Image (cartoon, rainbow, N blue to C red; front, top):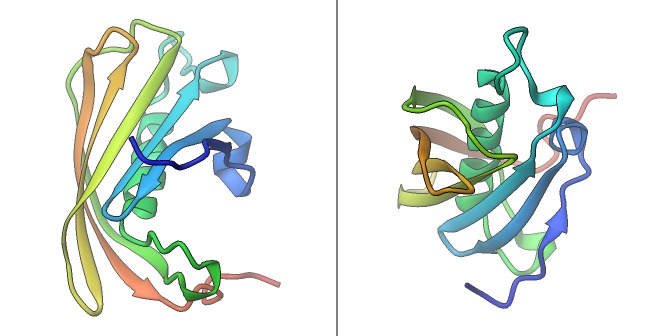
Length: 139
């Protein structure tokens, strides 16, 4: 664990879903979410889209760590492949994401989502392109 101060993610969908950035350092990010009714699918389980969004957030963060905010790169998802392994059995899930390899234009990351009992819920591989941080801003 680093000296990182955990914080709630308030931007966009991450904020709507209640994601919390627990740890963030070079080539690593950990995000958790405490589950409630908004995270459920029509069968009453955790919606797969919530899990994939959690993975996308964590793998997105792990490749752009930079202590100096004005030097941080932006990124966009190029590819995200997720395998669901087990249903969620607890009220909190956590995603640990690591950068596998990074270059000048792309980086590759892997992620694992677990529940509070350390059951592996999903595993994923992702590819991101580095972009200007303001490239996606809409008016």
